[in-house]
Length: 550
Image (cartoon, rainbow, N blue to C red):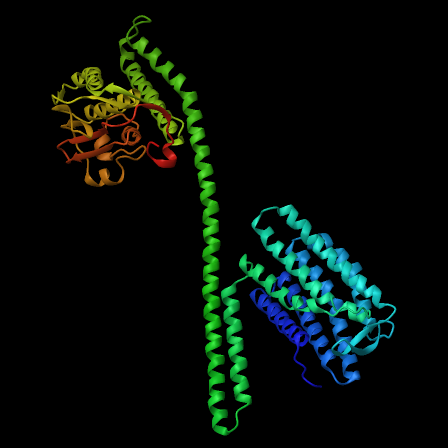
């Protein structure tokens, strides 16, 4: 056999090498995956066909050429079968075509394998074109050509249907590349049929057969179906094994045998540990990806549950607001004697009922307000108002509460400033009243002093009391949380623990700032800063998304 180097021998040699390596490359990524197994079998058959055809066309012996012809046709019989198996797996339609593949197509495939050595299939091998030998079609060969063409077109049709179904999905791009490269690959390989049927058309497109496995492997790896890093490490290590083993076998003397043998053994040991290390790293990365995916899923579930919780709280608060208000109003009317006098011994129980009804109504109202703010459904009306007038009104309303506890309640306003600024009147009223009411509640003697002042950028309100104060730890960790109350401070004081949370939300709603200075047993001073340059507009504010005004 003479080694003939031309376009056809190079194309067939490359086709055999590329097909084998691409099949092995993908198989090493996932040995238990039927997709990679079917791809490996397809490429082994393609490689055998390519080397078989190469050996036949360069052979100088008719007998050897005929044996090569039988081998290449046995491999060729399996190519469309394994291609259909691969396509049905890559398109996730294997279960649909499973019975057709195994009970209808596989017997036909085995039939052509059985007759590959028959003169009814190929009458012999003869000199054709520039080839030493090429097959000559027998009476049954036309059926083999039809089988090959129809099975290939069925596979491509399945692939095309899946692409149309996925439309512009990411997976569709991968399948498009497989469709195009497979079409050209079978066009290149199928070009040899012309010579077999003695049609004078040289197989010029045969190089396409060598290239299509590369395109498909690229498509598979590009869309991360397999672990490229592990495969690349295994392939590189395998090539080093081959290199050093070849050097060992070709050693010319004992010294070279020892040196090359040492390199070969070292390569085996280092390669083993390298592959093991890369696989371990890959497993850790895969586990991290899996956990991140699970964490993302759980986070989405938590967001959904949080939304359901907010909806439930909002609905519950809506349903409770009216009855809580009715109870408070009617008990208040009973307490004031609107429905006539009642026994003196009921004064204390009725008073307790009234106080708790007021607390219940306030709690329901606070929960509803907070729920609206957190869900982004609160309407904020930013209009120009006078904060001095607002503060005077609040202090006037709170004076009665201060007098009940024999406390002083003073308001100090710095002169010479313009207190006409933009804010939401209702929410700022509620927030400042809450702040002053809290100071009165937690002050046993002395009083509360409210101070209004400011500068070019902020209007500031100080609410200072001589009450119990708060610990530094409570201020830093719990003060602005829901239902937060310091146990040492709240004894015998009614409240729901929502006041300061609401205060902070309203301050942030106005792009403002809040701070507190407190010393245990010496009172607290809260400072609220409201910007002077907020725009006047009515907007729907989504607190949950940004935390501030858009």
